[in-house]
Each structure stands twice: as structure tokens, then as C-alpha cells.
Length: 416
Image 1 (cartoon, rainbow, N blue to C red):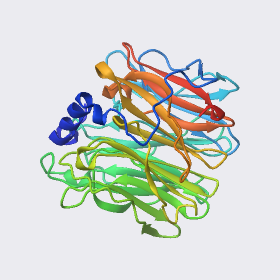
Image 2 (cartoon, rainbow, N blue to C red):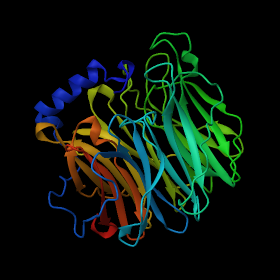
Image 3 (cartoon, rainbow, N blue to C red):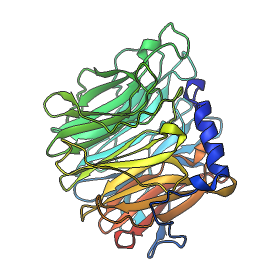
Image 4 (spheres, rainbow, N blue to C red):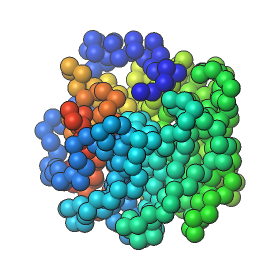
């Protein structure tokens, strides 16, 4: 479970109740209704994840190779962190990267996978340590042979405290990898809710050497996912949910082009007294950077998208992309033609939910969203993941039936 400080505020609970009861919030008026029929050509790939799996992530290498990681629960506690490579329309034999009772398993704080170069992979996961329910560390391992063998794990933070470290994101940077995470080391000796959650970073070289960790932001939202991407024009870009003294929790952006700089994030002015557990998503490609996120200013839940056409130096118009009653949990991808695909979870009746995808081109007519999968609104349905695989989109998502299981759906881009 997410700790008490991370539970939705009363305002968000009221919002969900209102959304279920009020037709005026059932669908945003300026967008066409979703395509109820599955998009043309949608297929489900045989999943390498066994029943009892969840927390997927997808990564694409520069040569187009696709990889997926996930966690499978173990009887008695903990889990197995697993990995597989997509070969054609089948997954190669799965590999166990780490397992044990101390593997931290949580729907919101899931392992992250990156493929920065051909056959080079980096993965991050969370490992519990003695000292408290939410005392756990980030662990990093890398592979030089496409995932057949993995290095011994390392920890990018050196504080050694029994506090929370997680919600990792990674991006290629120079010849190595930039690692970003939420860091609760300031909570030593303090009660829950008294300490500030911070955003910290470290650089992992190609030979596996970790640089010193550095502070990026001294006060951020406690348990929203972070996001990172690499733009050839503007360097490494990091998105996170910030938190100011007035409890405004808008999305923050940082850019590292030889030094960290704050960019001008879109201002929602969402004031909320607790963490919504709903972080942003970033993607880059074709001199574009796309940022998608959930927000609820004025008790109006929305999924928003902002696009930069200059590689991330400046964000253009912000558009709303949901269908009127979103849960959030966004994912985003830049398509080969320069359009953007945004995925999110949308509420349905009777506690059900759909994974929806909308193709967006700023300043063009809005297309109908497509329903990529059906699941429930529970936390165990997790966060969908989205990547481009040639002429199709791959969506990894969790069916939280008992037992839950990770699925992978392929959708032709032309059908969006």
C-alpha cells in the first residue's frame, strides 16, 4: 500500500464521486467520443509474464529492439524481477534479474528499464532494507549483451538511511545514463509527513561507474512517478510533480544541457493536500518533446499534453486529451509522422476502466480516442506503458483479475 501521506485528498475523493454521478463530467465536450470497437488491426501478443504479474515497463533501443520488464509475485512474499526481448511477434526466453522477499513490489513505484544503445540495457528496481515499511533503496544493474547477463546491482544514493528511495526514471546522457529518483533521506528521526521528499540524480558511466548523487529539488510531491528523456537539441529533460509551500503540486521540468536549468512548466495551480500518486510522462523524437500529465484544478480531473517542437527548449500550447472522466496514469510516445500518442486510464461504470489512446497533432482537429484494453480502476491495474515499434504501438498493461497478469497489445499507428 501507498502510505497515508500518499492517499488522495478529500477533494479528489469528492471529484471521483461527482464524476461517477454527473453527466456533465462524463465526457469532455470538445472531443469526439471514443471508438467503442477495437481499433483496426489490434492484436494481443503472447505475454511472457505469468499469472500473478504486474508493474511492466517497455524500452526501445536505437536499433528498434523492444524489451519489457515486469514483476512476478512469489509465494510467501516478495517477487521476481523478469525481463524479455521481443523477437518478431514472440518474446524470447525470459530472464530473472533479481528476486527475493526484499524485492519491493508496489503498483506505483515500479522497476524502470532503459535501452540506451544496441545490446546495452540498464534497469532500476527497489529493494527493502530494515528500518521501516517504506525503507527501501534503488538498485541499478546493466547488461552489455542484450539482457542475457546482468551486472551486480549498485545503489546510486550513498546516504545509507532507512528511508524511502524510489520512483526512478532514466535517460541516456553523454555516453552514460542519467538516473533520477525521489529521495526521503531527510526523514531520519522525523515522523511520517514531517520530512520533505527531495528529487536527486546521479550519472552512470558506460563502464558502470556511478557519479556522486546531487540534489535537483528540495521539496517535491512524495510519491508521484518521475519521467526523463533525452533530446538531441536540449539535453536531458526531467519531469516530476513539484510541491510548493501552498501545496500547489504542478508539474516541474528540469533540463540538463551542460548544467541544470528550470524550464517554464505549464501552470495548473492544482492545490491538493496529499500526493495524488499520478506522475507525468515524457517522450522525445523528431526534434519534438511531449509531456503528458494528470491534474485536477478546480476539482476537474484532466489529462493534459504539451509539445515542444524545438527539442525541449520551450513548450507550446497545452491541450486536454482525456474523455471527461480520467483516472490518469499517463504514458506518451512521439510517432514517426510527428504526431503524439497519449495513453491513460479512464473511468467506466461499476469500477471498471479502459486504457485509452489518442493521437494528437497540436492545432489540428481532435481525433477520437481508441480503447486499447479493459481493466479496472483499482491500484493493482497499475500504469500502462507505451512505445513505438516500427509502424505499430505497443501497450503493456495489467489485467488485475485474480490473479493479475501483464498483457501486451499491438495497435497499428495508422488505425489511431
